Length: 102
Image 1 (tube, rainbow, N blue to C red):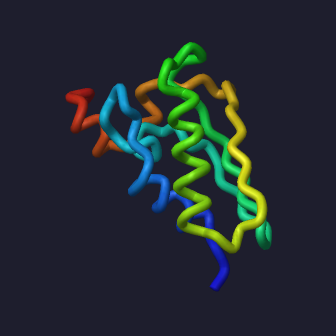
Image 2 (cartoon, rainbow, N blue to C red):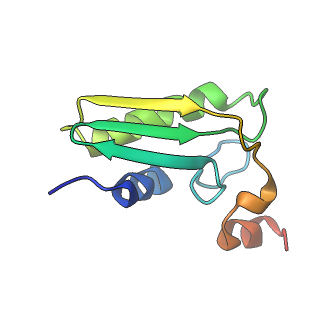
């Protein structure tokens, strides 16, 4: 069975929480793109700010979560991108509700 973009996002949703905000990074809107090509998984993501103190831990957690979920993937890369710059509008409705943002 082939790994899909949605499979990767769901594993990250279940396994990677922003330690400062306390919500998963998928619903926070930090995952911009996932590309799966045979045994390679490329993830484009951002952080809530360039100086995010939890950034290194979040990036590590993404790599480890994906590696554990898909051991058949030979290469997993996490690319930090800043365009577009993250804003609260990128959060899912559920995350906005959890944080009281309407």
